[in-house]
Image 1 (spheres, rainbow, N blue to C red):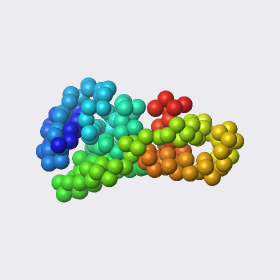
Image 2 (image 1 turned 30 degrees about the vertical axis):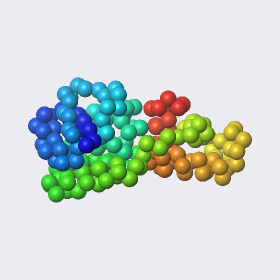
Image 3 (image 1 turned 90 degrees about the horizontal axis):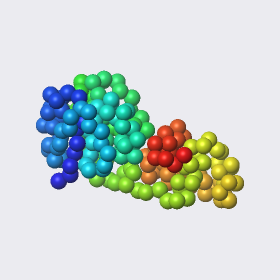
Length: 174
């Protein structure tokens, strides 16, 4: 069975989440001041506060992170992990959780490692260079740069240049 860590400031909310999540995974609840350092868990369920204060840890693992928020209109973008609102009813919470755990089984996200050339292309993208400038600097064609960009986006699940730039910064690529 997979291992899951809940990082949420309210123990009552964390225990409530545990009842839903124990159907899918072995659950550990950590105190609100915990800052994950090692990748000890298969999944992370965190408050938006924990996510933003530990973004360099969670961003590369975004396909395995579920942000729990009290807001009903929290932004859902490709650059952010899946979000679960505490204002949802039980059926909707179960639907979100089923989607979250089924996505992991498909193998989407950072489990695919970037090649050395893809890292070079990502570095240049993050520096704000055009595809033509990247092609000239790396002695490859513009079509090859485009292909690398598509592969990077697929592997990381990040579509926008700004999202790729944040990823590159958080992972020491630039």
